Image (cartoon, rainbow, N blue to C red; front, side, top):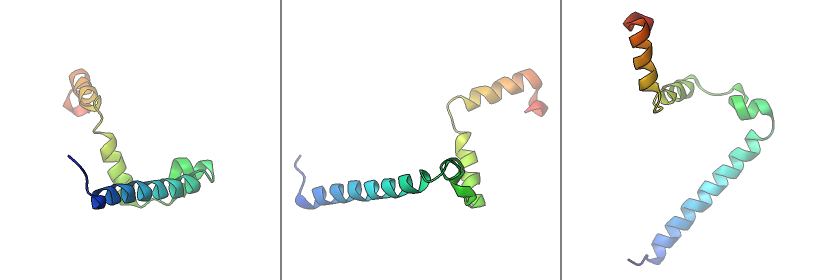
Length: 77
């Protein structure tokens, strides 16, 4: 399968935009330790909530919750 010129152009644009976003975020996050770890304490509540929910989708979380329920019952969860 051969890619047309427009395909290569779209791929190059994707990588260029990704690199530009990465460099912009790198410059902002490397300005201070608070900016890196806490996003300068300027994150909206909904983004923090999405981050917390996404954290619970790790591979070990269902096993941990099952273990807590086994040891402490449903009320201990």
